[in-house]
Length: 279
Ligand SMILES: [Zn+2]
Picture 1 (tube, rainbow, N blue to C red):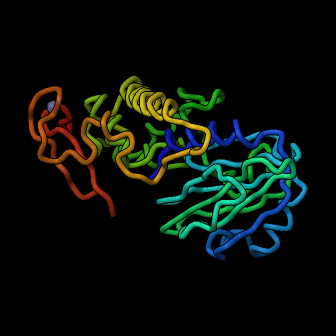
Picture 2 (cartoon, rainbow, N blue to C red):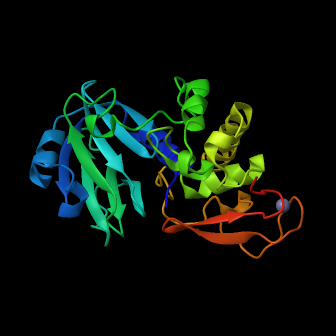
């Protein structure tokens, strides 16, 4: 599942290819891709025609095309969504959900999504921040991310720190993988009550999350070529750098203790039982 670094890699790749270009045609090939666009796929496609992409933006795991400096095409990659740069003469791909072509006749844009959890929607006036995601907090890479304020809010929570890290109304963009990695890096057990932690400890966990995501971003940012915006969805793309996620039974790289996997809500948590003791 693409997390913040993968989505940011996609955004950067997209920006390079679509900024300043006018959309000539849009085809939504699967209704699920537009299921959150209440007026339906035909309406979504019609609104795209003639719009100029004036920029791209991201908040957490959502990204959007800024259209005519006013509206937004909001996109979520879901579990397996990919935005691909595609030549206009390429045949429709098996999992292709939408395709956009541009008035300059150059390379087009495709949304492929095998598992169809991803979606696209048009938001009028949403250039700055699309209304459907107005409740999502800023992420740790946002220049306006107010870390002391976020730390103070997290400290009011009695739930485990991992649960707080995943709460997109507190801070966004941290998913299960990077939450586990950040907690390992900061040597904190995910079940530790946030309210029992000092503010510097909570802040250190956020710093760790930013660091591990920045490392993944640096790695992903080097893999572009002109035809392939992204490999999000091919799981394990950044996994070479992971220290705990998906590594149950393997030795902790810091202390040699075997990494443990436990159920967490409907997912899993991975941690080192020695480096990350519950206090
Ligand atoms: Zn360890």
